[in-house]
Length: 131
Image 1 (cartoon, rainbow, N blue to C red):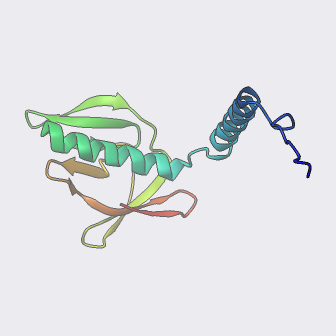
Image 2 (image 1 turned 30 degrees about the horizontal axis):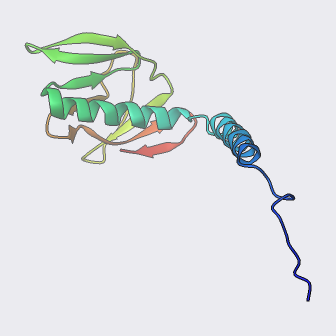
């Protein structure tokens, strides 16, 4: 009786497998970054969430206008940083009252304790974003 001996001659080496996995992971990451560009309302919502968290930890109140973010310092709103919220058309407060935003109006105030002054905002294109 003859016994067939099979070797691992026809398989892949570990180096070849690692190279293929590296190429797949690099191309997958590239496609993810290219196809997953943030939308404007996502970045607004992310910015507001970051300032809600910052308000909890710092104890400061923050306000948003169409062109800046302000911080409350000794009962005076001071500019903290320049921002572009020009795509926000109107906001709806917690009492369901809708207000169209003018240039220098404070449309959102975030206070410590995760308190936020509006319920939702409407972008210029008509998209409604719940906060």
